[in-house]
Image (cartoon, rainbow, N blue to C red; front, side, top):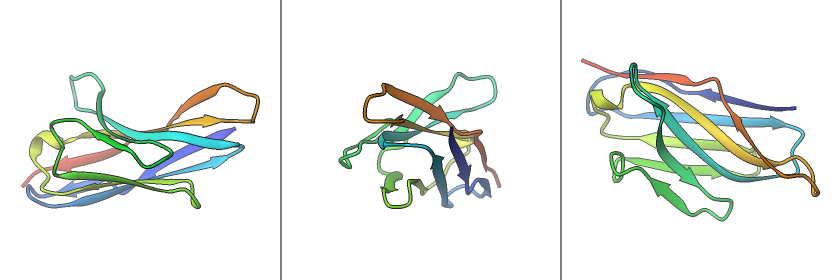
Amino acid sequence: QVQVVESGGGLVQPGGSLRLSCAASGSMFSIDSMGWYRQAPGNTREFVAQISSGGTTNFADSVKGRFTISRDNAKNTLYLQMNSLQPEDTAVYYCYIRVLRSRFSRFELYWGQGTQVTVSS
């Protein structure tokens, strides 16, 4: 079994910063890509950022220049540094990981339970 747990959400004022973490644990042979999606009330889940196993990053246009994504492979942990936060960034943020459970298995996708980020004065 693979577990994915996000942390670091909370309430922040506009212009502030937050750092989200996502820790993966369990039986894994390797982790491929990792990333973040978010879902605001009444909206569909949308892509935020992704990082490949080699460190290549990709961001949604709405967060480029404000968010950075990084990973610590030794700790199986993903991070999302969010700066210059705005009210429209308010959402539940979900982490995902794409893993191989064994050398001979197919890639599987696992999601965390989400962490709330609220940007408000």
